[in-house]
Amino acid sequence: MKEIRKTDLSRRDFISVLPGVFITTGAFARPLELGLWSQEVPELKEELTPDEWERIEKSSMAKEMAHYFGREYSCAESLFMVSLRFLKKPEELVWVASGFGGGLYHRDLCGFLTAGIMAIGLSSGMLGLDRKEAKSRGGELVKEYWKWWQSVAPLRCADIRKEGTSSKICSRLGQLAAARTQELLASRQKEG
Figure 1 (cartoon, rainbow, N blue to C red):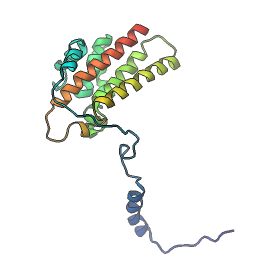
Figure 2 (cartoon, rainbow, N blue to C red):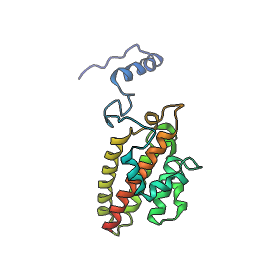
Figure 3 (cartoon, rainbow, N blue to C red):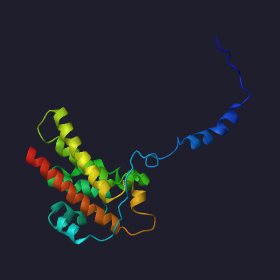
Figure 4 (tube, rainbow, N blue to C red):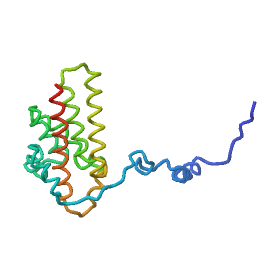
């Protein structure tokens, strides 16, 4: 049997060295720094390109975003609201998205990203399939939306809109997210 030796390290000394242990081992690193959500960050623009304008013009949800985003509706609430209207669901459900704006109120995951995922989930429940199949099909669309999002913007609000910059970047991303969400929801409605 091994002998357990008592050290002379006091509780206070032990606690004082913990931050150094965690920092050197990377235990406090953000998921992005660990590569868990790694992505090449695309250039963020304030204005829509001609191709993006064409996409927006085809989307009723993207056009409708102007009535909500920045007008007492957060990013998440505005996208979820136009999704509810597209899916013909009660608008009071928009309150589900109220805690997701501003990157979960912590400048973390963008509300346009999370609201698109919520809309996909809601539409999956409308397919009339058993739960397992509906979740599987919804998961496929969520992966598609997530991959698309990573091709147009960083995941986190703090990386999208730096402090003191124009909200035009967010307006552009909101319109693009609404158009992409509508495309996915429309493909879902064809299944159902």
